[in-house]
Structure formats: C-alpha cells, structure tokens
Image 1 (cartoon, rainbow, N blue to C red):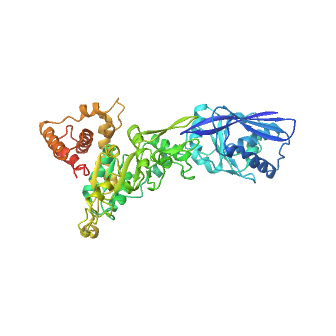
Image 2: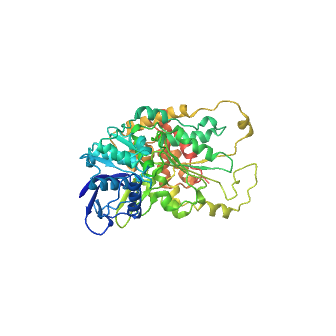
Image 3: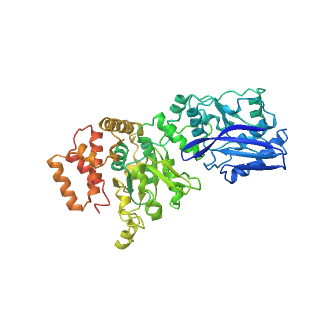
Length: 507
C-alpha cells in the first residue's frame, strides 16, 4: 500500500513543500528513509513507532520505505514525525480520508503520542497559501503563530490520536483564527523610553539623526556613561514598523524558534546584542543547512555590538558584506542561501583600554601606543561603514539629580517618521530606501552644497585629513539633518553638525 502526505522543510528564510511517500511491502520488517534526510529524520522511526503503539495503533511489521520528495533537497528537523505516522496509518487502512494529501502536516511526536512544537511554522503557512492547499495541521503550540498568515486555515492538534480523528471525521478541531491587525497594535509597544535617560542631550540628538537616516552609529565613552542604556532605547525612536515588516521579521524569528507562542508577531523593531565571544557563524548564520544569525535576527532593527574592540577581528570583518548589501549570502557545497540583513549597526567602545582617557574625574593609565593599538582592533573598512561617531561623556550629578521630565521616545519618533517620509518622497521610484543607502550618484544629485558649504567642507577635509569616503558620509548625514529641519537644501549649519559626528577621524 502507498500513502502520500504533504509536509515542509526550511531552506533559508523560505519553506519548501515536501511530499512524504510511505510504502508498505511484504518482506522482512525494515524501515528505510530516503530523500536526503538528516539524522533527526532518520531517528523518527523510533519516535513514530512508540507514538503509534502508545496511541493504540499497531506498528506494521512490513518492509517500510519513506521517500521525501523532491529527493535533491536536503531535509532536516523533526517536523516530519507526524506526516510519516499519518502516512503509515493511511497505508495500513486506519485512515480512510481522501483529504490527507490536501493538507500540509508538520509536527514532532513524543513517545506517548503527544505532538510537540516545531520551528518555522510561519514560513510554512506562507508556503501553504502560495500552493493553494486546503489548510495545515500543526502542533497546538504553533497554531497561533501559523494563524498570523491570513487566508490559511490552521488546525492545531495536541496528540496523534486527535490528528487521526480529524481526518477520519470522528473529531472536530476548531480552526485557529487570529485578528492580525489587533495583535499588531497590541504588540507595537516599547517598554524602554528615552525619557528614562538623564542628560546626554547631544548624544540623544546624534541618535535621532541616526534613526532618521538609518545611519550606523558608534558611541565612544568611559564606563558608566550610559552607552548601552542609550543604545537599548534606540529602537523606540525608529520609524513605525509596518505590518509587512512585522511579518517579514517574525518569519525569521519563527525559523530560529524565538517567537512567543501566545503573541506570535514581532511588532517592534528587533534589538540584538550578541556577546563579544560570538563566532562568525553565530553572527552571520551557518550550519550544515545554514540558519539565520544575529545579523538576520536584527533585520528591520538594531544590531548592537558592545565593547566593539573586544570582538575578534575575523568576526567583525564578516559584517562588511551585510552592511553594504543588506543581506547575507552563505555558500555551501550543496547550496547557496541568502538571508535578509537590513539593519542599523550600533556599536559602543571605550576611548582607551582602561576607559578613562576622556573622563575628567579619572586618570588614564594608557600610553599613546596602547590607545592606538586598542583602536586599530577595528579595521578602517569597517569604520568607513559607520556614518556617525559620537562622544558619550560621563553624566554630571546635576543631570542625575534633576527632576525635569526628559523628552519621551514617541515625540522623537514623530520627527523621525516625518524625516523618513521626506526621504521616501525624494527617492520615489528608486531603489534607495533612506539616506544611508545613497550611492555616489544619489549623493551628487541630492546633496548639493552652496559656496559656503563647499568652503567649510574643504577646510574640514584638509584640517582633519578626511578621506573621500568620509566626505560622502558627511554629505549623507548632513542631508538627514536637513530633512529633520524640513530644509530642502543643505546649509553650512547642517554640515557643521555632520562634521562633529566624525569623532575618531577628528582625533
């Protein structure tokens, strides 16, 4: 007897529909799985056998062959347990329904017959919608996540027996529904606010400029000056997230198994802060079948690298392609996968190894050579991709003791949204989403300077020895400052502020 069940596997950020073919033949009892399965799929034989027996169904003592088609696509994960079990039961005559092959079925089986959660239910639901299937059967824990994708009937099952009853018509399972708009509005709340930060007005201004133009930013200051505090509040002033961006971001988190089972939608800008001991694969992704790394988990949000010089140089260098192309391409012998990585890099570092070279209250014990060696841990090409460098001084006691209310994030976000709207209008019809993404041609077109601005920038270039790339960075940041001010042209005042945000190059 032959049975066919549809299931799914993950490749990159997309799900592929896989046809699970189960054949029962006479002969010595064996269980063979073909079609490039990984170890976890080959081990499903024992899980499926125990789950069937403990659910009251005999395991067929025949020659069993399970084929996962298409055979050239490598499969991994435990989501094939449930479809294999249902295929065995249909081939054995315990499931009579002709509807089995019209649903996509995923789920890991426990030995007692329970259906356990899997990763990637949301991209699998997108694959169901694209294929026009009748619906999908998922573990009950993943039902809310899959139901976020509209127009896909989702049915959550808790046990193997419940799935069998659903297809035999002996058990009714209610369709899991989700009001996506309501969920999106409920989840679009930031719990950290710029109003919590005392003082540091010029740093807040620099972060507002960075958010308005999607510029990468580097915070430089002594320990305890509030660099991490400020960085963690940066997502709260980024432009409002759209529903499309929320689903796109949630899909990546679903693949990584990081979605909240009850509130399965990432409706705020993600903030990822990997430890400085992270590996190359941890940062950009990897594995036999590559999965998303920190740069992809930060898609549409912030990647925060605290203590930037403490990261291994090889780890930092792999950031250059994602920052330039807004995506990560990982090549393996069998496949090449691309993950989205449209993010803002926010980094923090001390000004010297001891951290106190810019702190008037503490004495720095570092020599000039030590400071130079410390700063050269960050390569020039990586620094060239950071538009804004800003000093973060220690906070004065008067600021800490002040009871005056600081400006909340929601008011700053209004200005940022307005500036981004100007950029969308300016770049309409062009493949440029914001000022930070401008190329040389766009800079020449939209960042024209008057005579006074040209003289000012020429003096700064000569005085500080700035590079051609720094020239472009200053023009882009000045364009963003002008957008925040509602100005059509870049003035010397805008340029002056942009030049101040090149701390490292100014010495």
